[in-house]
Amino acid sequence: MEMKMGLRLGLHQRLVMTPRLQQALKLLQMPTLELQQVLKQEILQNPLLEEVDDMVDSEEEVSTDEEEVEKREPADSEEQIDWDDYFENAFGMGGANAEVEEREDFLERVPVAKQSFCEFLFSQLRLSTDDKQMLEIGEYIIASLDDSGYLTCSLDDIARTFQIELETVEKVLRLIQTFDPPGVGARDLKECLLIQIEAKGMGDSMAARVIRDYFEEFKQKKYLDISKKLKISLKEVQAQASVIGTLNPKPGLDIIAESPKYVIPDLVVERVGEKFIVFLNDRNVPRLRISQSYKNELQHNPEINTETKDFIQGKLKNAKWLIQTIEQRRRTMIKVMESIVEEQREFFEKGTVSLRPLTLQQVASKINMHESTVSRVTTNKYVQTPRGVYELKFFFSSALSTQAGGEVSAKSAKVKIKDIIGKENPKKPLSDQKIADMLEKDGLIIARRTVAKYREQLGILPARHRKEY
Image (cartoon, rainbow, N blue to C red; front, side, top):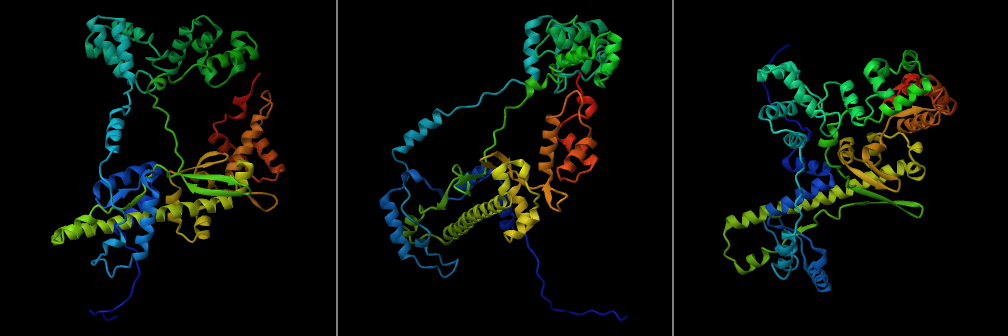
């Protein structure tokens, strides 16, 4: 085969991820709260963007807007910009609202910093002793606790670090184990539970004896062995297990737990008659428009230099593009949610049991969009429905076959499994195979291992561990 150099012309199509396209995709994926912060930052950086204040609009402004719209003519090119096309009414600066805004800023509530887990224990340590050595050892021990409140290093290592006797370290540790929350400073789960049950004044109870002498059997739920060794009934062992179940295996998390994060839905679905209406929950998102604050500048200063004019034109293009992108994001989100509502109408009417299997590709094909676009719309976004607040990803799930030849959602199968276990006889809990047989009689084809997988995802124990005496 002869090899030689040559030139050839050809046409190829390819997608180029320009900076603007990348930013548009990021805006599409952002939740409402994050978008709100980004737009406020854009307003600060781009002087041609301003936030629309609905409270100051008046009938006079609206009528003036209509007159200006009639006079508008399309610009010939981006270089020759007709500013009357983009500027509306004069932008009022200052005024009586300035004093009100200043007062609101002054009265703004500042969140109070929360005390950390270590600081909470340090304060108790300083109130418990004023011995310098005990304070140093206690601070070292507290700093060695993990988030759950367990000691992560051995007492021998601490004794070698301070070059002191082991008994001194044990004395400080016993002091820390009396602090709140009960169970903190334990070296393992057994010690943690014992500390808590002794703090309740139940150190001589049967529950304390079960933990102290038969903890391994208790963890494996070998209640029959425990009843034989303690010479008590299975029902009594079950009662002691219930008492132990009220204890906290991770006491440290009660202190370091973060404040609850409230979900603000990005979309809202409301039922009006027989229809479900979808709209955006974007009341707190700034509404943007092209600012006219530079209009008077251009009109009263015809000798403005080229550099300034180029700067203004560049910012104008960015502002126009951002406003168009936000509007496109709004339409896309509503279109995707409307498609989900249409596909999952039975869920909105009857609940999770009626949830149908649905994929991103199905929605994308229906609204003529790419699957990745639908994925971005449904990522980290929530919708408020008549049945509660759900993440958009909730409405997508795999399919399970039915005997009738149809399909049901895996989420609806989980609901049925949870409902069956909730109604079982606790003295004779149902095995995974028995649950699979019951679902098959109900028309759902599902394997035993699938039932076991869904049961574990629901946080439900196996049958032998659910048994009550």
